[in-house]
Image (tube, rainbow, N blue to C red; front, side):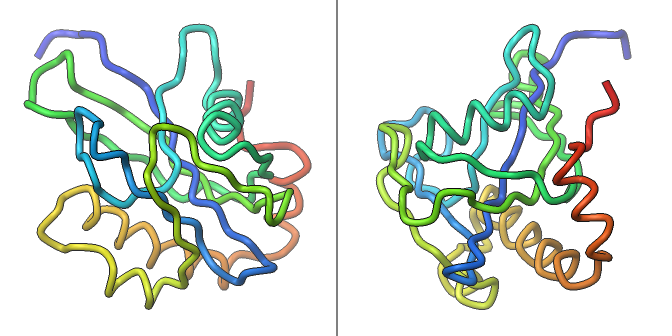
Length: 165
């Protein structure tokens, strides 16, 4: 396979200590990809941006709030539609903590929001929908990592970020 071009993206799974839950947003029915699906904040990395800069921009655009990055949850590779080069996306997914409780607002990209614990999300999310099945796996990983990671590691990532420059 030859070297090609692809899109870069981010995911931000937002945790609220006040609500003791994760924020899920439902894509607008007017969206061209996965309309009506539940997701975390997602978005593309613009030319000239790093992953973390894109994450903060996307969270501000989609929710109108600020978050702090706690740790990396993982990476993702998928096709946003048909499996052709123009639809290929590589992404980095972060666990974040909401910095402005109670101030979340939805953009036109989403039609609803819910704060859920992972067990509540399992009942809400559809296994037969690829995007929601992915989100189920992400929530299970997030809950495990949030409980297992040393506080010093989370504190350092919050202070310094995860990008190496």
